[in-house]
Length: 388
Image (cartoon, rainbow, N blue to C red):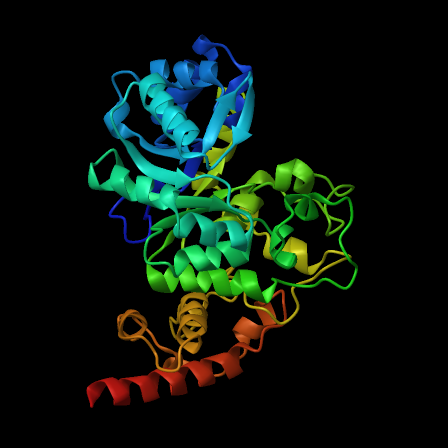
């Protein structure tokens, strides 16, 4: 299992994580079997947004004796009222439900205290200006939560969170289908039976979000990585072609700022299917060729950092140069941290010999040579400014 830094939190999380929602339909013994199997595979991050009491208790029993090896995302605002889940900002109910989460998980702290399911910008502002954020900050000050997070499906809300200086990481829905869609406050928009035929490539606000998170050190953990399973079938996929779990995982893990994809598991075999990503070949991970040859919605001209351009005879990590170039372009002046990362690469855009091999291999028709020339100029000019 590989591990990644979760933004600036100081936490290192497994690339493949456990989204525990599916555990609601399992017995205590089955929950323990799945969690133990995850631990054996090296998975160390678990998201528990569910308010249903039994699953919380079953997870807590399964974590007994191994709490310290797990990084837990626990949600603030997910409550159980009259036998059903209710998302609420009513402080008394929020506090009661969060204490219940601690008690049932048999722990006195949560690593990532997630402000639960904020998809409207007006609600975001209300939360950040009201008593709920004061409660969350108090939890952090007392060490009851170690870091403040937020879950959202809306890139506009996620962008506000990433720029807030308060939210340290985001649980966000990332997959190639959702990435084509503009921001929406209605989650149902992402699960429509059909998308508009003129949609193509990553929506600018979503591409910008990933770059903002990377730049601000706000880590992303991923939900809905499989788009609810619709990407596994050509009939339900908006591209008209099927992707594999490994390809979906690789897509999410090649987005800037993404640290872990949290998948749901019904059985140990489901865990193995996701963890197979860690030993998959480049061919098995290749989502780019599938998307580029799909009958609908090709990502023409967009660098998705998929790495198809490699190998470069000059040793340039083209995908990384492109990622840093896109980050650098976001600001009027190139941030010193981005310049430093670029300078530390073993080969730079200036080493491009314009052989064109990368362009012949790119599934999306990206003009790599032009981008290398632009990156070379941008970082050269930035170095001149920083040296002054």
